[in-house]
Amino acid sequence: MSGAAATPRRLGVPAARRIALAAQGFADRVHRHPPERLTMAHVGRALDRVGLLQIDSVNVVARAHLLPLFSRLGPYDLELLERATARRPRRLVEYWAHEASFVPPETHRLLRWRMARIHDEGWGMIRRAENTPETLELVRATVAAHGPLTAVELERRLREEDEAHPVLAVERQGNGYAWNWSAVKRALEYLFFVGEVTSAGRTSQFERRYDVPSRVLPPAVHDAPDPEPADAIRELVRIAARAHGVGTEQCLRDYFRLSPAQVKPAIAQLVEEGELEPVVIDGWARPAYLHVDARRPRRVEARALLAPFDPLIFERTRTERLFGFRYRLEIYVPREKRVHGYYVLPFLLGDRLVARVDLKADRAAGTLLVQATHGEDGIDRGHVARELAEELRAMAGWLGLDDVTVVPRGDLAEGLARAL
Image (cartoon, rainbow, N blue to C red; front, top):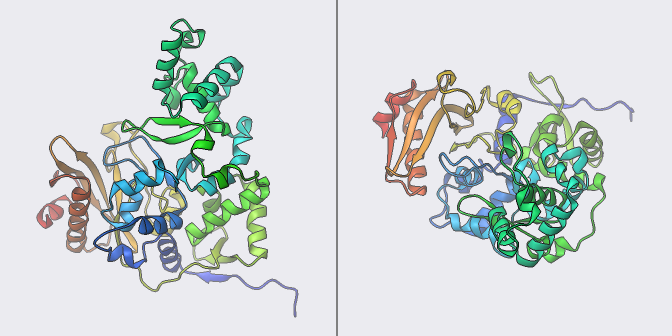
């Protein structure tokens, strides 16, 4: 046999797109034909597909981590996800994966190398907590004795014990994400990052409830030895590769926010073991990798509204390459400069992203407010409007809202209003 490497398989963009959708669960029967009653088994299979759920505090429609399961399963009971994240045995725990994320406990263990590298991986605001070791020790001991506690509850307890405690007198500092953190909050976030405390769930106001890992993680995970960093990173790349179906190195490293130096040897080993196959995707400048177990459907009949932080689309370069869909979140864009709206959900129909819908759950009025609706070029607008109307009705019912209200803004709004 010749020692020359085989020519990589070529994939067209439509085939790569269908592979990506199937990997994320959009080709599963349960997506188009959900059972009358969705169970924890359905939720578990969907979670196995995506590998993580990104967390975000924005609650314009629903919390970010709630929406990807609705997109894949339809109207599911939120109690199922509450059980998965806040009750023993936990199926999901929180850590910095792709930003703040819910991940399976086994994946939490794979991120211990990140916990040990706070000086490389953490940001300056929480690293400042190292300058106040007495605060760290006090917070550590209080969580161990009285957790789970939110930051506010912990400060209240300290104040009740000693109103004049110097920790409570430290001026709040910060900007941006940590714009008003107290010394106690910084210490909690430091200990959370290094893995000495973790989250036992969130309150209805979305505050973390901090506790020690031994009371949150399953014993088999908590007591397991730390994996070697290279082994852990290879497992993270393996999870990302399954969740992508096919993707470039950039796609695979973005899933868990890894560096090129970390990912390259992991990909090389997975290729050598036959788990990843190098492929060329038409029009893509970078090589891609196809997972050995990736499904390759001829058709995908999906219908879903996708949250801005959905794992299918949170890597925007990949979204543009796969779908020809340039997507930017405009939350931080001044109102007068927004193109499509404040909180825009792409609408997936078949295997294409066909529209953009600026949504708001107006809970006081009991309506799902469609603030703007824009269709993509080349779509059958009547068909898209009818399918979108059905999806919006389903979302409104799932959110406990009585109606869908369409604001006449955007080129698809009139057709959508008629369809509703």
